[in-house]
Image (tube, rainbow, N blue to C red; front, side, top):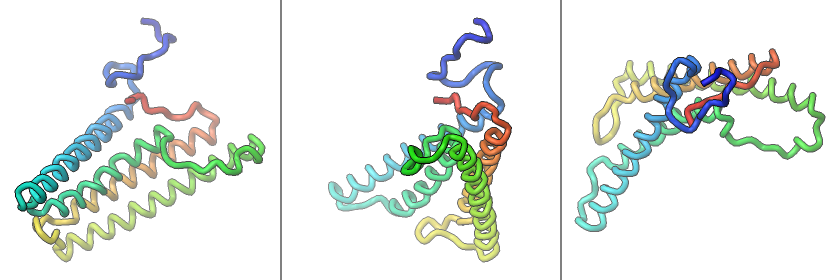
Length: 180
């Protein structure tokens, strides 16, 4: 297979031609799918237990409420790389192409700063949860690891936005995720 041949991106990433960021993206994707499936199973067991056996899953609501942010924050860097986040294009048909390029650069920088701010605040929240030994209501799980993971994923997303910003500034080819 020659190096200029189009690459099959439908399968899993394997081989030396994969970008260096491929394995973290693959793991984020797999983990978010696992959490989504687990949340579906917990919800199913809880509903069947509640309405068929009149015995709901103990702490089912708490488990789901801990998995939901995990799914969101695991998918956040992926949605930025894949450009699958929500965008509003109301003014795109009226703005000149050159202005749209500058606008995209500014938006990437603002989004990176916003995600960095979120990561910083979540890290502070995690530190406070650890200091005051905050736990969940029913399962008595320590909460700081969850907010620390969210802070790390927000920081990762901020870095992805910065890389996107750098690519836009230098006119490079946009970053792509080939894990689809």
